[in-house]
Image (cartoon, rainbow, N blue to C red; front, side):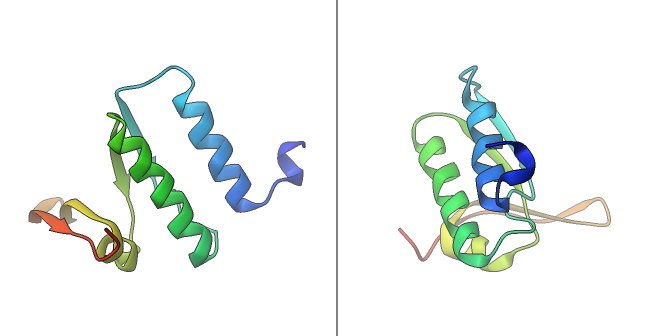
Length: 94
């Protein structure tokens, strides 16, 4: 399929696949669930979590607090350029 024929979720999966091609030690995911429905958001974050469990560090930026509560991990909250929260949070979807 051509890029303009892909859904939002398919485009996100392709972006993750492209990021994995060179076996990186770090993937920076800036709002990887933006512009897709909640069900696909969970699928994308679950995929990133699986990649993380295989040894790749994932740095994900998101405003979706429900994803943070569900998946957990090290959570760093920054407000006005200052860290106001830095803890490891156990998710509810373990």
